[in-house]
Length: 478
Ligand code: ADP
Ligand code: MG
Image (cartoon, rainbow, N blue to C red; front, side, top):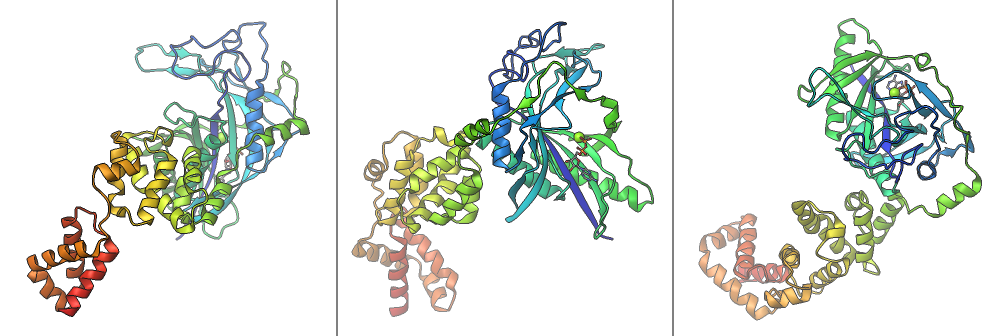
C-alpha cells in the first residue's frame, strides 16, 4: 500500500536587529544570564511595549522576496499562556492579521524546481529560556532571549516527504540570510523549524491528522525526525489505529519522536488585540523604500550566472551564499563562456575545498577574485596546466605572492615545447614496455596509464592535450 507523506513547516527566524521587538534591550546572543533583559522584558508593572522599526522592515523585506501581500494594517495580539520563562503571562504575536499574507517560494529539491505557497509570515517576540542543566531541584530562568524579534514563516501543507521539506528549509535559510534579516546561526537558535507531518493513502484528497515536531535546529535532524514520524504514523494506521493530533519532540540520541503534549486548541490561548500597541500601519512609501534597498534575489542571480555560462549545478552551489556570488560575479565579469566555466569550476572545486579545509568564508579568501580570474586565464592560454590550480591556490594561501609570481618562482610553466614533450614521452615508452604492448593489444586503459606517467615525469607541467597527441602518434606509428 502506498502512503504519501505531507509536511507543512513553521519557521521561527530570529531577526537581525540591534534591539528587541518591543524594548530597547540589546538583541545579542551569549551574554551572562539576565544581563540583557530590561524592565519591559521582565514585565515590570507599568512598562509599555514599543514596536521595533527595523524588525518591521525585515518583515517587509521578506514579504517582498516571496511576493506576498504586505498588510497595510496588521494587529499585534496577545497569546496567553503560563510559563516561568514568560513573565508577562502572554507572548505578543500576530494572529488574525499577519504582516505578510500569502506568497510563493521556489526552491530546488533533487535538481527539480518546486514551488510552495506560503500561508503567512508574522512578527512576534521570543520567550526566555528555562535552564535545566547545572541545576538540581530548581530550574534556572534566563530572560535574555525574552523579547527577541521573530518572524514566523508558515507554509501550506504542500511539501511531500522529508527530503523535500529539508530542501525547502535549506533554501529558506539561504534566502533569509541573503536578504539580511537573519544571521542564520542554527546552533544559536536563530533559525528553528517545527515540522507538521501527516500521512495519507496516495490518491486521497483529504489530509491525514498531523503531529507537530517542535524546534528542529539542524537539517539532518529535521530529515530524520520527519522520516521517523511518518513511519510511526504509517505503522499505527496499518495496525488499524488512528493518529492523535499531538506536539512531539525529536530525540536525536535515540532517533525517535516522543509525545510532549496533546495539541492545544486555539481557544486555549485566548488571543485578543494587545491594547498597549497601536495597529501596525505600513504605507506604500514604506514598502517602496524597503524595495529600493533589496538585493537581487538568489534565483535571479542564479539565472544570470547560468546565462553567463556557469553550469546550473555550480550556479546553485554558488548562489547559496551571497558573498560567494559577489566574488563569482566579479571574477567572471566580461569573460567568455569558456573562461567563465573555468572560473566557476575553480570556485566550486579547489577554492571551495580550501575554504572548507580552513573553515572560513569567501570574504577571508587569500586569493582575490582578480587573482582567481588570472589563474583561469593562465589555464586558458596554456601557461599553466589545470592540474596545478590547487598547488597555486595553496601557494597563494601560504603568502607566496600573486599567481604569476608563483608560476615563475615555482617553475610551474606548462611545457608546451614539443621537443621537450617528445623527449619525456620517449623516456616513458622505453621504461614501460609492458604497457606499450598492452595498448597495442587493444587495452585502452594502458594508454591512460602512460599519460599519467608522462604527466608525473613532467611534474604535472606537460600540456595534457599535447601529451595525448604525441603519445598516440608514437604508439600507432612505431
Ligand atoms: P498551528 O498554528 O496550530 O500549528 P496551523 O493551522 O497554523 O496550526 O498549521 C501549522 C502548520 O501545519 C502549517 O505549516 C500547515 O501547513 C501545517 N499543516 C496543517 N495541516 C496539516 C496536515 N494535515 N498535514 C501536515 N501539515 C499540516
Ligand atoms: Mg504550530
